[in-house]
Image (cartoon, rainbow, N blue to C red):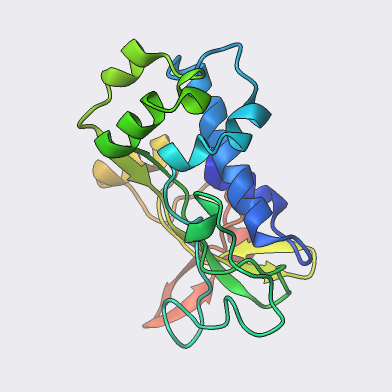
Amino acid sequence: AAQLSVISKMRPGVLWPDMHRAAERTILQHLQKGDILKADGSIDDMVDADLGAIFMPVGLGHLIGLDTHDVGGYAEGAPDRSDRPGLSKLRTARALEEGMVLTVEPGCYFIDTLMDMALSNPNQAQYINRERLEKFRGFGGVRLEDGLLVTKDGCENLTLCPRAVSEVLDVMKGGQWPPEKDVMPEMRRQWVTRDKGKMASLGQKLHM
């Protein structure tokens, strides 16, 4: 859900820290739905209290270029790195431009040290259902990573792998990949296959 939230908002002119915040907000909303965070808590107030950085203590993603973690994130003239928890982990604070390629890799983690920090901080603990959170100690976390190309009016997903639960289960059972139907068009994936050893676009051959 956090990944979809970011993908739906990516376009030229958008600030990368705003995309990070969008992922944080979505994660907090789902933690609230799962009763880990109190239902009457304001998501805006949780963000202001840096609670998002407790569950997503990593940056949303990074530029990709000649290097996997490409340079230029904090080049001269670009916005400075934030000192706020979570945002300080970002590898860039730049506005997105057409042609940029970045990873979108939000994650939700349950890390004992960070959980203890939040529970001992009244500004954060007030939003947490302590008993419910304790059940997730030792769980670890989940993180998904896709590579996105910023286009003139949005973005294009360059990562072609199962994301929907049904896709994962089908592949685990030996099902066809790419599938005949795209069950998650909101992922904006560009479907390709191999044709005599070369990558070939499926284009309209894949039913939406």
